[in-house]
Image (cartoon, rainbow, N blue to C red; front, side):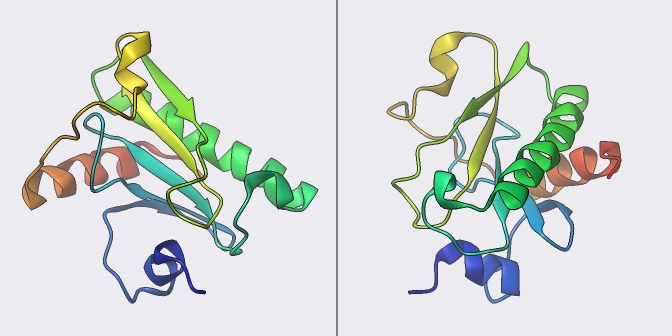
Length: 132
């Protein structure tokens, strides 16, 4: 079954894209825990992160690092929290969440409701700060 992330990668579903290479993509989560909450996804559709081949796995984390550095520069936060849950979408991905404390990355918390303009503003700022 094709995941929602594969549909985003193919352009069938729009996203607030932050960065993209031949192998990876980063876009804002549309149900964010915090402003700037980003999903980092390999373009290869593999359900479980630890089933990725070694090269793709390592590359995903290096790509995520660059995205996290840009997020930290452009979004008000103390740190960028990292989470891999892997149950909500059957496509490996990493959550990068701007945080001020440990409980800011609690996925049971209510999600923010942002307007399209704010998503576009955040995506643009972070995208400009990334050096791939």
